[in-house]
Structure formats: structure tokens, C-alpha cells
Amino acid sequence: MASNELVFLFLCKSLKRKRLIKIIENDFPSIKVIDIPCIGRFNPILAFKMITAGAKGVLLLGCDPGDCHYREGNLISERRIAVAKETLHAFGIQESRLQAIWYNPGKDKQILHDIKKFLLDIASLPVINLKTTQKKEG
Amino acid sequence: MVNWTKITDATRHYLKQVFQSDDLILSYTDSHTPGMMTPVVIRKAEDIDSIILNPICTQNLAVYLSEFFQNDIQTGKPVKGKWYITVKPCDVRSVIQMMADEQILKEHIELIVFDCDGTVTNKNLKELFKSEIRKVDFNDHQAKAETLLNEELTADLSGLYQVKCSDREICSIPAVNEFTFIGERERFEFSGTAKNTAIIQDTLTQEECFEKVSAELSKCIRCNACRNICPACFCSDRCVMDKPKLSVPYITKEITLDQIFQYHLIRFYHVAPNCTACGECERICPQGISLSIFYKYLHRMNKHLFGDESGSSDSDRQKLLSYRFGEDLV
Ligand code: SF4
Ligand code: SF4
Image (cartoon, rainbow over all chains, first blue to last red; front, side):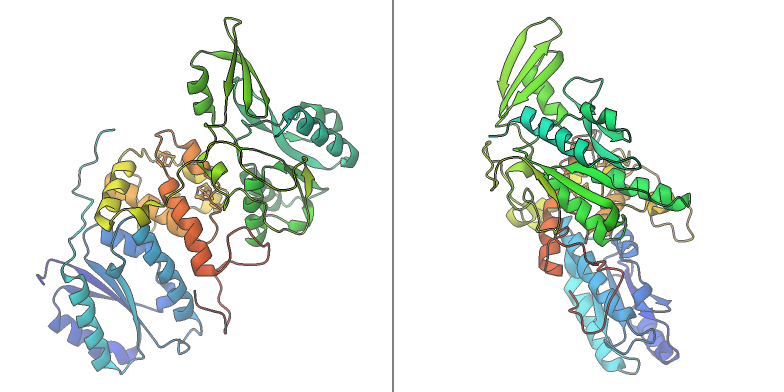
């Protein structure tokens, strides 16, 4: 994948994820990592904005269900992501562009494996850049 | 068979019996534009006679309820008396959903559901009569109009009803605990001409669907009318669309295709657990965008994801805001 085809990775901030972030930034130049306090705080409308402005996909990395530092952050967010995926689908945008994976810090091997899988999933999808699409006069 | 004169009379009669001072009635009356009704707030018993119910009562009155309550809450006024609201069967759901979302206080609302056999939008009525009308009367499916030139025209409405009217999923009264029903029929059967209620996300491929959505949305002028009319969209002054200067600019005020998409994506996502497919957004759109492509999908999605239809129960179902351990995730 060319490095200009951006993919955003949101993950919950944790000291133990520092090493992982370094690895990802080294190995996957197309991925832009953004850390937020908890995945439960992630607002899917940000993902909509990114996807319609040219990002290929948005991946979320949270802790195992039930293991959230803020108790239910990842559970709420799982429900929101389900609705957000349906939203994309209703607009004719591929749902696979928005995915979430759930691993506790430390499980780097599985995480990297899943990231590769995600990139493969969205590799063949076209970039949607509505910013450059002209609005038809109607 | 719906006799509109009878229904109007019965509604007035009922309201006169129950109305007390401090109460408030939300209903429909004649507007200055022939062929169009207007919502009315009644606070005096002698005004009850101005209520008129007929098949052009298209507005969903639920949207006014939350505005009033917000007003009262913000100004610190205690809500007094009962609020009577006359609703069509399809709008009951919107009111119930607002109760579930705690936008209105259950104990103050009294629902009066009137029998209805379909509603016709102002636009459709205009097309039907073609000439300027001065007055229009309804009986069952028949509309009798008087034009400005004093001609008398009659027309049949059965093919003109809104799409939602022939959709049994939407036009049915949910099993709510209490309401007063005005009308004679025991079971609802739509007797007009049925319309196509297919969901395009099922019938088209993903690319075709994207193209269709883009084509529709490129007409949008971002007037916000569909947001303001929506009973499921109740953030009023706290709406993210009005705050383009947030530190994270989720959306700007430009009318470019990406911002239009963003606007509708946000709206879809925000009304997701609450949309009752009332179709007001489509009716109000000045650009004639068929927003039914979204709300029909939403309505079914709610049922799939959350197990029950929106507006079917007034117990708490703020699914995107709360989670209790042990609950099913979706
Ligand atoms: S159909 Fe439109 S107006 Fe009605 S609740 Fe759904 S989004 Fe709101
Ligand atoms: S009412 Fe129509 S034109 Fe106005 S913002 Fe909604 S979709 Fe766009």
C-alpha cells in the first residue's frame, strides 16, 4: 500500500502500548497512530469525516471487553461502532473501512497480525475523496 | 372509511369534557394557506372549536412537545396541568420515543389518537388540483375543492397518500398503556393505493447505492430543515452542526459534497436509536431529496440491532449513551 493512502489507528493511551506504537510507526508508514484516553471516548463522526475526506480506513484498538480502565468504555463503544458501520453501509460506503479490535496491552503479536489483516481487507477499496468531487448544480 | 367531520366533532367533544384551566392542547387548525393545516396551541376552552382534523394534517406535532418542555425547564417554570396532544397513529411512536429519551415528562402527556386513512402533503394536493384553491373539504378518500374562480372540483386521494401510510410497519399504534382513541375502526386497514416501500440498500449494489446517495445529496443546500423538524433530533441549542468552531471541527458550514455527506452521516448516526420513520424530514425538504432512503433503513436497523422498534415502549432505551453489565451488546 502506498504511504499516501492513509489509515488511522486510534488506540487507548496506556504506558504499555508505547513499544507497540513505535513498531507500528516503523513498519506501517501508511498508518497514522492517534492515542486517546479510552476507546469509549471515540466519536464515530470523526471516522465518517476521515473516510469521506480520503482516508482508506479507520481502525480502533481497545482493551478486552470487561477490562476497560473506565469499566464500560469499550462496551459502549462496541455498540456505537455497530451503529456507525450500519451508517456507512446505508450510504453505500464499505463497512470494512471501520473496524475495531480488542486486545489488552502486551498482546503485540496478535495486534500486529490483526492490523495486517485489516490493511489487506481494505487494500482493494478505492479512496473516497468527496473534498475534490465537485457538487453538481441541481 | 373515515368520516372526518365526525372525527373532528368527537375530538372537540372529548376535549371540552376533560379540559381544565392550566391544561394545554396541541392540535391542528386551518392556516391562511388553503390546502395546508397549521399546528395550534390551545390554552382556553373556548378555542377548542377551532380544532380541525383531516387528511392534510401532515405535521408531526411531537416535535413541539420537547421544545415546550425545554423552554419550561430552562426558565425554571414548573410544568402545570395536563398536555393533550392529538396525534395520528404514526406519530404516537414519536411521542413514546421522546418519553423514553426523557425529553418530555410522561405524567403530563395525554395522547389522543385519531383515526386516519393516510395523509396528503401540501405539494401533492397542489399538483392534484392544478389551479389555485380557496377551500377544500374532505370525506373519506374524496376531496372537494373550491377554486379562486368559484369552480367546484372533486378528486380522489387514494393514490396520493404518503409512502409511510401504506407501510403497515410504520402506520400502526404501538402497544402503549394509555391513550384515547377517536374513531370507529377497530383494526387498521389501509384502503388507498399501496406504494413501493422497498429499501434501496437491499435492492442496489454498494456502488449503485453510493451513486444514488451522492446524486440525491448533491441537491442538498444545508438548510437544516430536516434537522429542525425531526422529533428524534432534540439537542436544540447544543447541536454539533451549529458549532463549526469546536477544537475538533467535526463539520463546517460549507455546502460542499463532503460537508453535506458529513451532515447526513452525523444525522443518521445521531438519530439512529430514535428514528421512528415518521418521514417528516422527507416532507419538509425544500429540495425534494428522498430522505426515505435513510430513514427506512434506519427503522429496520433499529429493530435488528436493539431488538425492539423505536417508539414501542416508553422505558429507557438510550442505547448509545448507557450500558449496564450483562446487557446484550447490540
Ligand atoms: S423519519 Fe426523519 S424526521 Fe422522522 S424521526 Fe426519522 S430522521 Fe427524524
Ligand atoms: S431539508 Fe433537504 S436541503 Fe435542507 S438540509 Fe435537509 S436534506 Fe438538505
